[in-house]
Image (tube, one colour):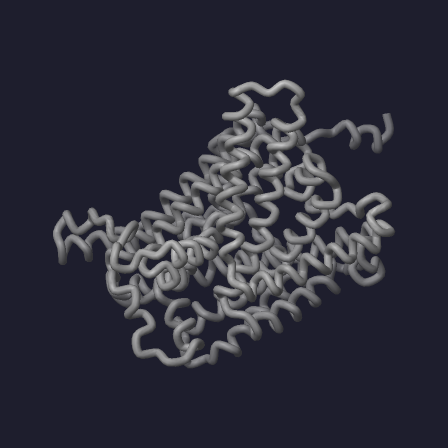
Length: 461
């Protein structure tokens, strides 16, 4: 038997349990995912950030069901791009993939911005803009050297983040009890404050707070390595969203009780830049109130390290996606398909992503980047929900009440909540995201000779 035959017969082994999948999903999302959003979500929702996190969780639970079902049908696929291409049509599948590509591009940008925010909070003597240059250069230089963040480093980082979050929550509980007693821990105000409640505000904030859950779909990429995948992939996706929602909701709930006067974050600030800075660091202000400078520094440092890790992997992920498209000649192969001889990495792409990320970090703020990521992600989520309904419900010749409940309602509800979140993104987000989508449609039309030929394949592996 030749070496090629041996390699062709090798398969990924199903060794991952349900617990392994859930832990993997939580590592992807990160235990501190909701904290950077706290200030902006609280301000936009007029003190109802925890409500927004929970509303987004509902949409994510039903969308997770759709992802799980599609992963069961296409076990080797593992991406919204493939699920939509298979379940609906290759053309909308390509557009879903094109929108996901925008998410890949904006991940290193948002990480550079938040690294700049947290580092400037720790060392304000160094200007924020200089921090942006420092982190963009750091991410690019490390990736050019072929640095990989090992799995054990992710585990250690997750444990440290979790410990600091527990520290923050314990300090917040102690602060609240010391001032209002144990009854102060029970309040409906973070969920519903009649004097400040507005569905328009809730909708706008939910479209931002939904970023908390981005990454759960990465679970489906492991379908071939899971024990009993038909059960465990779906369950893991759903449980990851539930655990993330409850965990993040508890953090935001305690932060809101510790700082009930949400409007005071921006009181007296006249410029938009000053207000954005105050909201970017709002969670640090809460940490300082409940735990003093020690907790403030600990939380800021953990958020900084988490952003550095995400930024490095985000940049290499975006550069590898460009390499895959270049290798397959979807985009110019000579540049994008180039590999460095010494480190075997797509060095041209890494430098390009680094330059684009730096320039974009000078043009966008954290909130704008978060919404642009949600634009691409939630378009893909809606498409997956539609693909699942078509695959499991509409393609069936005979439909039962059970099919309606199990195969139609989850997709319909997931699609509805995701559409609600997506439509409440700001106009600026739709202009930028819509322009990117239009470029993808034009490109697809050119490559398929007016939608007459086969769709170019984007590899997200």
